[in-house]
Image 1: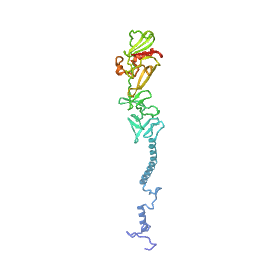
Image 2 (image 1 turned 30 degrees about the vertical axis):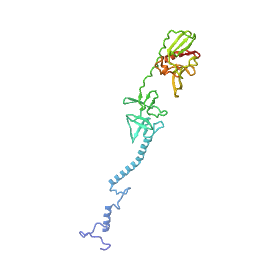
Image 3 (image 1 turned 90 degrees about the vertical axis):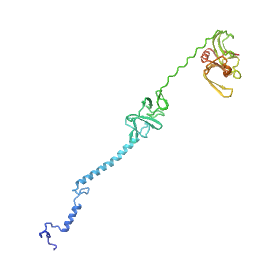
Image 4 (image 1 turned 90 degrees about the horizontal axis):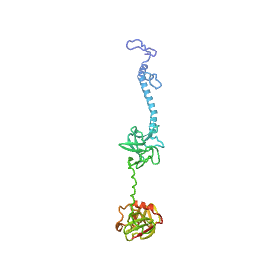
Length: 328
């Protein structure tokens, strides 16, 4: 076929209506199948593939939004876990609401109805997770949690083995202790009524009779007080006989000295009336008996031991400079 001849259809020998060359027809068919040469949108997809294009666009938009939200969420979580206040109990695990309430988080979950041990202090979380303050009751026991931050007590911390701000006592677990009311001070026994005894000295004085183990006090010619006593043990600890005078009157003090074996002794007395060389009249609350022969085996270090009630009465009668006559 010459170059200028029109193609003839092979089927019927008529002229072909398509003026394209066979090679052009084959190329066009290939392009339709592969999409080459077809019009595309801004994304590079043929207009004929609209469903596929819309799905990919939607996926790209969602991926973009997620990538923007992820840093914001991570920042919010980090801020919640580290939020703190100078007045708060700590930063590790604690978060604070805008209303000032404190919560303790464990892996993002608020702890509830339990004790929290933090920085050597104990805190309690209520049913809603809030850190409690003030007096609380658990299983029939009461505990006090600091209502204000004070020295050695952060806000909400439990008081242990001490007194709370209202003066209540709590034990080593922090539980309230019911204290017994203080026992009333014992009423001194009335001094024994002295028997009729003439004053052998004729003037106001105190008489100590070692052989009888008795003490007498005279005002003028009258005997105003008498009582059994315990004087010093015979020997180096014997009470010195002679005519002495009361050197001073003292209340609530220790008497100290040495035992015969060289050890020290220290005794508390409420009434002290010394008269000679460290010896004196005083109460002896550690004794339950006086008089008789006690002094021979369990005598004092030289002092005149008296029942507490008698010593109290004598202290109110005598004066500094009053004579004390000691005889055997």
